[in-house]
Image (cartoon, rainbow, N blue to C red; front, top):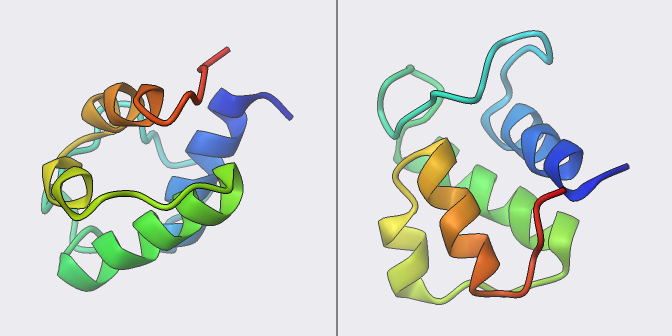
Length: 80
């Protein structure tokens, strides 16, 4: 599984959304599942998938699918 596939899967698992739902354009609070509780589930899924521990500032700044890719690069996660 590529890192991009892991990333998308973390959204599905962390937010509890259907696998076929498009995640590419998602933004925080744009869907009911991505509320504050869903956000923490998403972060937990990402940390587990990539074996990282995100800083509080990065967790707060994680506001969209696209921004998340940018943040993960700080943790040496390369998106394939």
